Amino acid sequence: MTVQVNRPIRFSSRAKFITVLSIVVITLYLFSHVFHVMLPFIWAVITAYIFNPVVTKLQRSTRLPRFWWVVVLYIIGFGLLFWIGSVVIPLLTNQYDELRKAIPGWLAEADKFLNTHESITFFGYQFELVQFRDLEKTVFEYLNTQALEIPKTLPSLLFGVIEGFILVLVYLVVTFYLLLQAETIPNNFYRLIPTKHREEIRTLVGSIDRVLAAYIRGQFLLILIMSVLSFIALSILQIEFALVLAIATGILEIIPIVGPYMAGGIACTVALFQGTAPFGWEPWFLALVVALVYFILRQFEDQFIIPNLVGHIVNVHPIFVIFAILAGGSLAGGLGLLIAIPTAAVIKIVLVYLYNKLIDDSAAEAEVVAEAQQLVPESSDAVADSTPSSSAEAA
Image 1 (tube, rainbow, N blue to C red):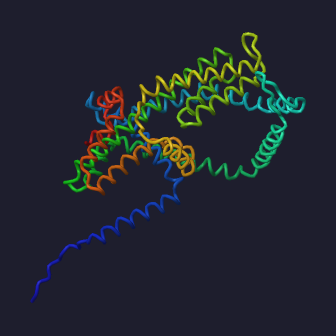
Image 2 (image 1 turned 90 degrees about the horizontal axis):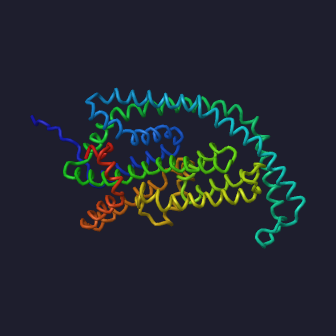
Image 3 (image 1 turned 180 degrees about the vertical axis):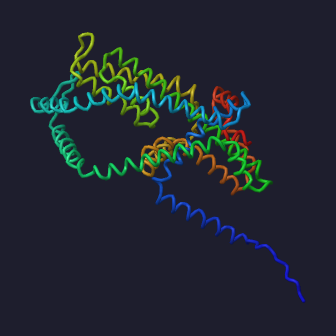
């Protein structure tokens, strides 16, 4: 009698390739059809990535379990949200309502001006206003159409609010879990990699982590600094809705290329049409001063804030940056605009690494990792050393 020995199934190289390719295709297909459901998970990963160094440092300093520090972080977060909801939001809401009510009057003034003037002279140059009337007509038609569509969208809006509430709950739960398991998740990931390649992948992930960590820190500080500076400047110039405009300025600053110009354009428009101007100035002169202030803030940002906070972290060609921004906005809307540049930097690191693998250039691979480490400024490296992120800890 012959005894049959059970042998494990061994995949050939072709079978392995087909298996991996099938998993990737199926995953991409599923993600493309349920992307809106993935948003709370993506934001949870970003939130956990940002706050994990804080929780880790507190845990190591106090020897308390991570659970309690995550709970404390949530308590502080909800307390901050309560303060914002009870103090800041009412102020923002009042300014926003006043701004919304003022817009029809501004449009009426613009319409009256366009109907009574064929052209304007500015610093000796004459500009015809005929083409602006056609643009104004198009804008009015669009606004009227949108106003008529609002009642039709109320049912879907109600269901959207319910769905949004559920997604927020999912975001909070997933973020809590990721913060709690932040030390074990990277190790579980590395266990999926063969032992002989594990150290190399740790080095690659570590270089990506340093770029992302420094970029995210820099962007958050950039929002805070630009919001405060613009609020001070707008308050001195007695611009109405200064708080709303300042917060919008800070947020728009992180949208590359067009964001700062959008922020300046909005502030100049408010200054031009608000009806009052300080120091006996004319409204057009106040708008010109606001434009000059935003230009100075932009130069200050480019020359001092960005080099010291962010440095040359994203060493990507400007054409590729523009493409990444357009692609990110098309694929994921506002979220895509926010993560387009760091995603482009990560893709560049990975693609160069894979290219060097294809041509078997080990020396170039080491240069890629060294370049990624040098892209982060010294100040950012110091912060990263004192508050390591999850993937760096695992390394």
